[in-house]
Image 1: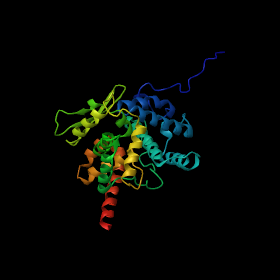
Image 2: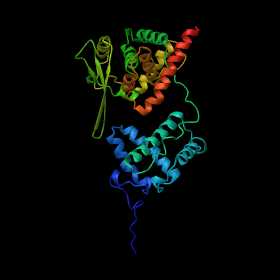
Image 3: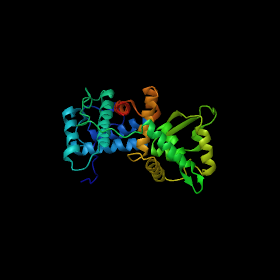
Image 4: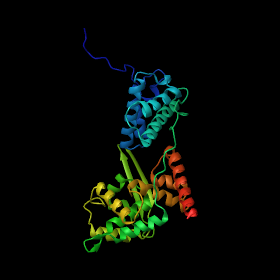
Length: 313
């Protein structure tokens, strides 16, 4: 008798076109990963989406045919994940897992593998996500003043001000800040220097372009003279950059912890209040249109909250 182990999915599809209603969900995940990479998703996003799908298949069984899934089954899974699994699930993680399901089943539906998209009407969350913190114009000025007062020995330390101005003007993420190279800043037009944020996932290359204030180059040169870079602009860990933001916030008497996330929201709110178009802000933050649907609404609420607070003073 043969002892050769039989494959879990003997009819595993070799291309997206081979997927049918009867195809087990677990047999589609490799092709789904290839689809995400082709769409330009980062390595981090691909890993996160696949981890989300593994949790989903563990609960609903990897052998379940993709055509058997309904909106009710998806909602039941999300309820289990949030309330019955026994593992804490933040609103951010919950929202991402919903997005994963939407992207996956939309992909199957667009292929014609399933007759309808069961995730289209799936429940997003049980309650509204709390608003994040964002600096008001007055708090921005107070933080900038505090950053400019910081010292390195007896001299002005230009790192806090550069970090604060960079995040304020661009809204880039912590990892993007840590990976920033001097060559990512285009000086060819001194009146309108440009920051390029570049990502490459296997064969997919993505780039977004962010305009900086003309005064930024002067500050950058002062910083580079004080901290000559070996490679990256910030020759320290992102943890140290987090400490710098915390110190700026405390020195400026900001009533909440200043962080990369707060600066990202602050940059977006500032742009919105300046009248910059939504699509420009979305592209600047590097968000997909699916992610922007919720993020854009939160930015608008933060702007309204700040305006209302000013009116009440």
